[in-house]
Length: 117
Length: 112
Image (cartoon, rainbow over all chains, first blue to last red; front, side, top):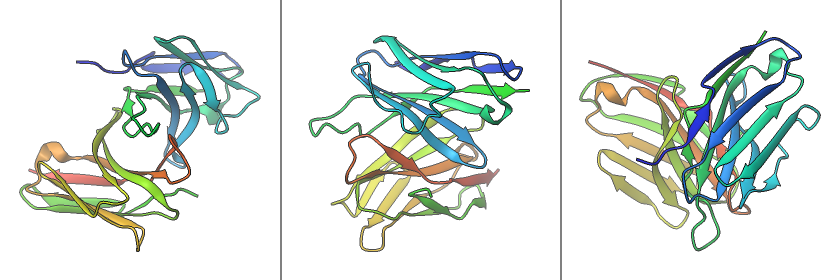
């Protein structure tokens, strides 16, 4: 049963350290999304990729966050340097645009719970 | 601010009862979707209703959409303890092909 996988599931790190989160989208999906979920802000879109190209990263703090897709089976989200306010659950989702070019349904991974001390 | 706002924020019902959650949004949409999130898990897509549809059913789920009022409701009939989760509405705006805007969610507790 196809699903999005994310690693690690939990990460505790100290302020200033680099954090890398990985995502394997569902095979055949060509859109990938990164979200951040916090109690205060809810679910926020950080980045959107289509065919491995970053099309929207307007939700991402540019100075410390970066997102890439080295290949079709791997998406990464890096934070360097990390700060306590980055503590959140980070979700990756993938999808496949329909005929109208819209990605109607997104399939979410289990998330990476990040704690920055 | 978020496109979708859910009401109520929390709902506690007895198993077997129906649960109704509401969602309001602000701009024109392509479609509106409902997702479920179990504690500590990712979101699971439940149902999608397009802007030209008024009602949709899937199993024990019934979704309505009123574009004139910019609102939607999700009805879960004959609830089960396993339905305990947070439920989010998400809207795909009319001017976007991908950007889902999620509401703040309704936490549903179904008591056995």
